[in-house]
Length: 222
Image 1 (cartoon, rainbow, N blue to C red):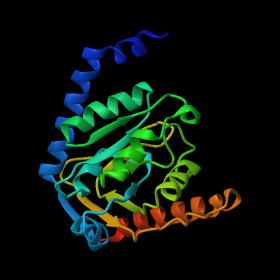
Image 2 (image 1 turned 120 degrees about the horizontal axis):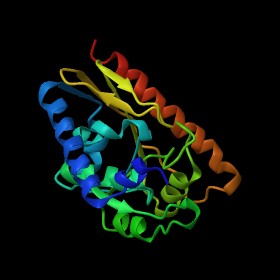
Image 3 (image 1 turned 180 degrees about the vertical axis):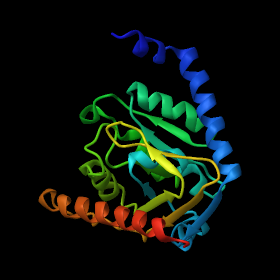
Image 4 (image 1 turned 60 degrees about the vertical axis):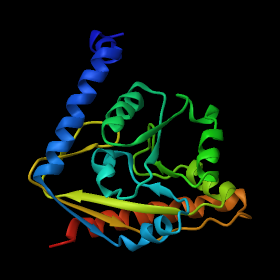
């Protein structure tokens, strides 16, 4: 294992870097303008204290907490991979709760997710995570929504000043003094009687809706 990976997996180094990353994100927030469109979509569920699953691409994780304006914190599904653990530490500084999982998505236990949704909590899932392919919806989020009868609400984000990392997901880094736009989509309800061979249709539909939100975020407001 390379020395860089060994250092980055060190508990104290991870926490130090995570605190610096969280500080940077807060600086971006304080120096930027944040606009949110179609807030009525989640408000309808927040007002009635009903759960939903928030869906957004993995590369938009950095700023996602600033779209959330409800008293209950959102629980973000994170992988057991070192990147996921690092993101979970950063999230703790930004009032995001973490749902740890196994490195192997196939062996992932869904019990914590079902328990949270049954308790009217809110879950955030990156449907292309934890390792891609980039911006392609996996069947996991569709199955969770189907089995719990909980709707999915997509969201898209864009910032006027940013760059992307050379990572599998082209992770989006927003720079200070940006115009940051969030666009919420409408709730997507998955039929509880959905057949396995029909799941792919909703995977494609959710993928389309997230991308539509991002495209709208790029032009709103002008």
